Length: 192
Image 1: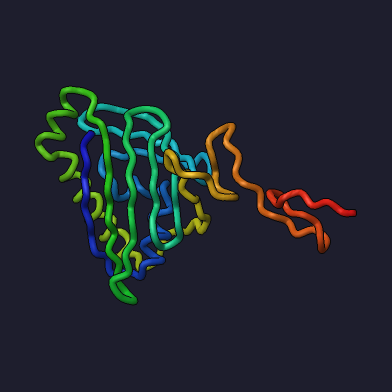
Image 2 (image 1 turned 60 degrees about the horizontal axis):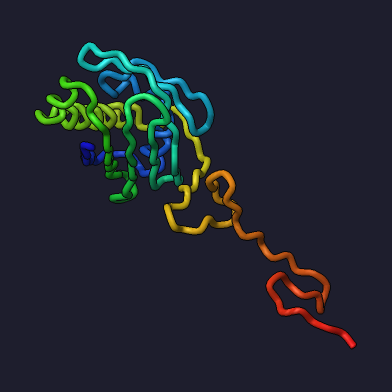
């Protein structure tokens, strides 16, 4: 697995940078090698890429998203990769966009490219083009303001309302009953 971490400072407010990043179908405007992205559902996208003459198509799923803070994703088919982009308010008018990505180079060409830093260079260029794109506009092309909570990690109990693996149940919230009604888990009470 190869990990890349890069950042760029953009001269727009954090909400503008975040809102633009939620517009996945605009990525081909600033991401080299991304030919088309189709939004299938609020959290799933279909990607068509052409990098180094190799065409690929795959679906990616947003695994966590919090407004003006972070968007995490992973592929659901195709070449395995995932990552997270975070948005850090520097001041009222500027934001640091930090991208961390992990991928697994499959072919000999991809492994050589990873060793030579080709993908790192491409990610740096993509972030610089994002900076140019959003700063030249000054406003986002749209926004998706939903929230996607992260799935529980291995060994961590799911919280009420969180998505959870099939067959795992979350604790039910307690609903108050009439006065004197025992709650689930209370010891039995006997009346004489």
